[in-house]
Image (cartoon, rainbow, N blue to C red; front, side, top):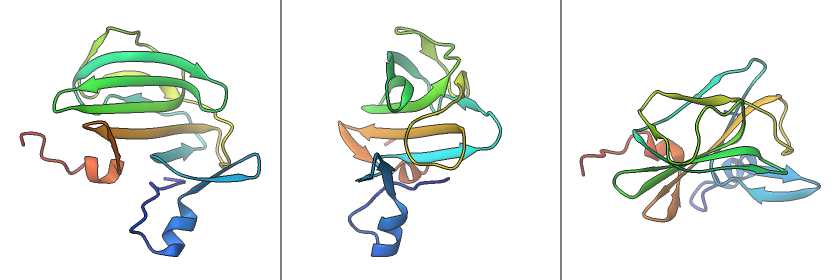
Length: 134
């Protein structure tokens, strides 16, 4: 993890570590930025349906997946996308490879991962521990 989710509840030190810089502008990180020296597979975190695949000038390729329980996951900064809009995916399916973005980071292979629950951004680290049966 190279940048954590920005939370208003975190102390000032953690908040500063959760800021993303782009063209000398600092922004709170709305997800988690994973990065590595080596390419890595981007896998679906849950079963779902691909609702959008697009390209962004700053974040690179973006994949959006709708899941049950009003959860949406967004995978940004990926390349070699293997899915298209309407595809059904299973948890663990490979969606793409890690890729570049124009945000400040020290590695070329990235994944910026965001999670929405009932339309609200949530910390992906808390998402990993959700009891989806509720």
